[in-house]
Length: 221
Image 1 (cartoon, rainbow, N blue to C red):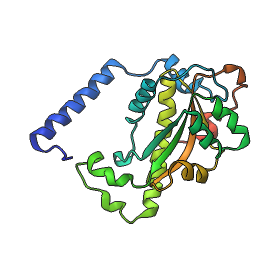
Image 2: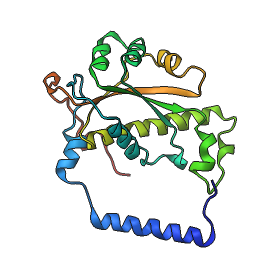
Image 3: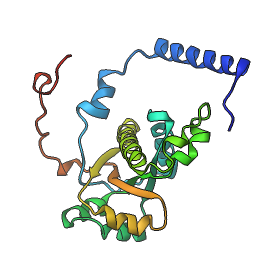
């Protein structure tokens, strides 16, 4: 894919700037209720109702998630939506015993992974400057970039899910090695974390745990 140049580039840049000004003119911030829904009063969930999630909603969730920023637009995250009984049984092999029920009860469990060969897609994702030479043969830089930006995309995924009315429950109590062998053998993908999504059964909730005050962990420099 070729990057726009000349007059075409000027037109596209002008439209991008106009679109952003229009967005800010239309919405200057989220409502307090919206912030409560996605972060302030949101909870991690461990039990789930039987209400299913339509495939179209999963696709909408992805379409929102993919717009979150990553360095050089690398977009290294890859998502596997585990929802069949067979897929759940495969995933259960990797989980600590206390997490099996949480995963089995969720309509869908997303494997948030990242592709170590993400940089090979840069001619499409970052067409105006070929940065592949920064990653080619540099395993440490690839790993660092893929993990950091894939984790960011996982966070965008959870916020987007809440914004669409879904509940989420992220999990790290599993074996990445088993997930990678079961789902990604022979590929360049590596798992990061798991995230159950669905409509929560709130009866499993306990009180919200403490958070730090601003002055405890923040400073100005």
